[in-house]
Image 1 (cartoon, rainbow, N blue to C red):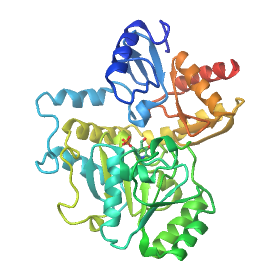
Image 2 (image 1 turned 180 degrees about the vertical axis):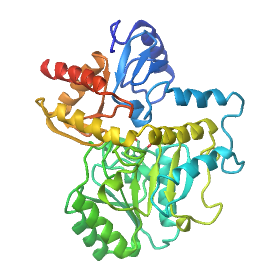
Image 3 (image 1 turned 135 degrees about the horizontal axis):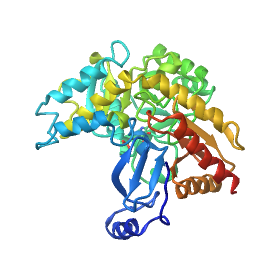
Image 4 (image 1 turned 180 degrees about the horizontal axis):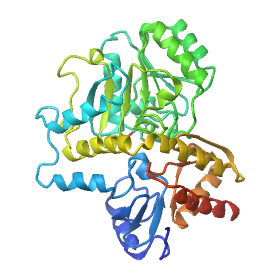
Length: 402
Ligand SMILES: Cc1ncc(COP(=O)(O)O)c(C=O)c1O
């Protein structure tokens, strides 16, 4: 149960936050508390002993919540150093184990991976896989509202907020609307330049940071068709939506399409660019010192996939996401929506969005803003109906307090 015992931030957190401000570059304390590393399931404690209910899952990276017994067992196994190997060059068995397991949940034929450390790096390597065999490519195509990461390549494709990219050097891109007119706009671009000049098209089938907007089936189907027809690589960014959160292993499976390449990270604990082996460039063309080199992360990712399978969490994600959205639909909010356990609703303004996120926090519930006026709810996959009801009572209370 939520239990907030101090004013927030508590004294111990405040002490560390003050010091952090002095040393951390680009300091931005969105949630002002310090984690204690204690917690169980969907709950965690800060160092002032306050207990929070986490409906943000460390930004979708904690599918099994805090201190899951299966992951604690994995942790126990790794009691020697190094934990990180220079994994591109010096091989470890954990890479094979993870890739073998990944191949059981990726679409047929997409059983080759390049392992990296983060979501942005996964996207960077998708870009490289797509364009290696396209010497005439002059620009990439992404969607309005998209978020693909903050390294300069992935940032070039990110359109959600100007703050992220102002003045940084970028690779050239064109932007499609995230609606049913996307295919017509794509056709116009191809007609004006040529299909060979399009490096690739990349999209999130459910936009994450951009506001939890779910693509229309028509948009996905028509854009996919044009890409296939013109031999343009179609990349799905599954960094946030992948690994079962939508009730299927990959969000694109809800749209009955298969991309040419896709990125995954977050819930997998390591980043990966995934495609068919024949699409990858020659050996040596991709590399990274730490690429998938943390044996602990790879072993955790492996156990997470196995636990999701064993505990039937895909269908639970669908059921719990639908249940949470039905509860939200009874409140005075706009556009409650979900695809599995990617759940969101809209508020009347950006100011209201920030107020609700902050009030939830003060009441012990961690939620995340998304887009200009949305709140996203992404609890761990192990969430129960009782915990959803507890979160709902906080949301109801803070909405009423406006
Ligand atoms: C869809 C998507 N792509 C890429 C990224 C970048 O991932 P990372 O922050 O691990 O670099 C994110 C992060 O939120 C994301 O949501």
